[in-house]
Length: 135
Length: 142
Image (tube, rainbow over all chains, first blue to last red; front, side, top):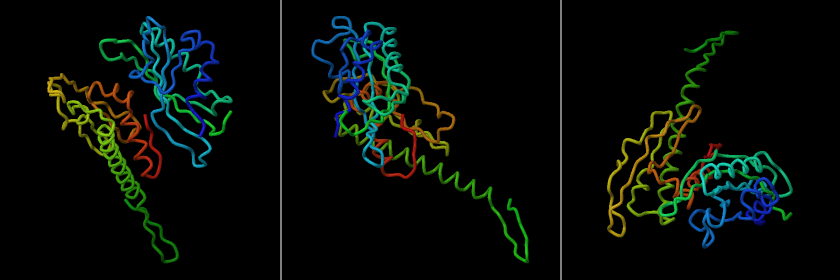
C-alpha cells in the first residue's frame, strides 16, 4: 500500500500560497497532541498538522478513500483561518499525480489547544481519492 | 386511498400512497436504528481509545431522528464529576443540536470538549465507518 501521508505532504509542499504561510511545517500523522517537541506557533511559526481519521477503499481496492483532518495552527485566529483558506484553494476539487480528487467534507472550525497553551487552530476535513499505486 | 382499475372483468387496486408511507416509516425507523448503533459503537471506541476520565463524554452521546427519536433529554447535565484520580472536574453539556433539513438521523456527543477528543482519537467517525460496513446503502458521515 502506498503512503497517503507522503502523497499529501509532498503535494502540499508544492503549493506556494500555502508554503508562503507555513513554510515546510506540514506535519503528517500529527494532531494537537503530538506536535513536534518544542513546537509553538509563536516561537516556531504557523503549521499544518494532518491525520487520517478513517475512510476505506473503493470496490476495486485500487483507490484509497481516506478522510483527512487538518489542523492549521497560527499565532492568531485570523492567520489560522488564512491557512485553512489556503488549504481549501490547494485541495478543493483538485486532481494531480498525488491524488485523483479531493473534496472538503466540513468547513473549518476555530478551536484552541487545551490549557495551558491555548493556541488557536482551525479544524477541517477533506476526503481524498488516492490511487494505491506509487507515483 | 386505493385507486381501482377494472378491465376484462379483473379489478386491480393500487395502494400506492399507503405503500409509500409504510416504506418511509420503515426507512426512517431503520436509519434511527443505525444511528443508535453508531452511538453504541462510538462508546466502545471511547473505551478502547482510553478516552475516559469522568465518563461524562462517553455518556453524552445522543440520537435525533425524523421518526421522533430524541435521546438528548436522557443525558446527564453539566456539573462537577469525579475523575479517575479522584479530583473534581467541571463538565459541560452543549445545547441539543438541530436535525438539519434533509437529514434523517443524527448522532452527536454533547460534552462540549468531545470535538477535541474526536480530533485527537476519532471515536465517532470511526464508529460511523464501522457501522456503515454492516448496513446496505449510503449515509453521510461528517
